[in-house]
Length: 261
Image (cartoon, rainbow, N blue to C red; front, top):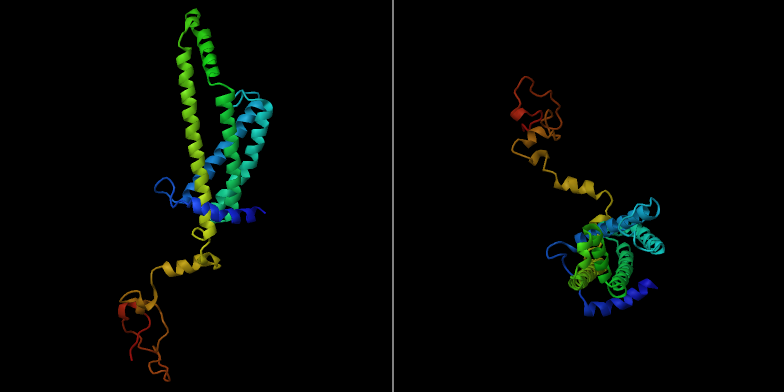
């Protein structure tokens, strides 16, 4: 059903969007998807390690302020993503569409979860709460002088603007990554990044080595015929009369068999 839905939606998407031909104005799409998969794998491993530090080893780390259920859910999602990203990287190397297509679905789910988390942080939890936490921390360290701090409104506005800029940047980067991965899927489907015909030949590496090695045999150089030991009439000069050759004579160019007829 997923394949049918993708095949039905492909003509509509192709009329609206066209796959990109390069990544970051110079790199190939294949290289870009590989970089995205590696970076995504590193992020998944980082969040799993963070959750283990908070929940198992009781050492506060990045997501220590999250609810334990939220940490467990996000850790489970990242654990699912580790084999998917590895499979996507192998799909990029071997040019397998189904691997990259599954990773595209997982990347879309990641994008939706990130959007939901950023909307919750920016709208439900006001960024100004972080300002109050910073002011209270500075007041505890600086003493009663910091109690009369009057720049909370300015810091609140600065934090809000910074959070909106950061959210916009993250959304643009993730949308671009989705576009690159989708372009890779379309290129493989169209055959531009699919397996080449030469890959269907078994032991093709040996054939390429034979074709790419320097020429040898009697045509390798001007003295190649003397050193290649190609069967010739010597010492049977006439084919029917077998002679013992001409012992004691010097060889021509250091060879052992010579054409003397």
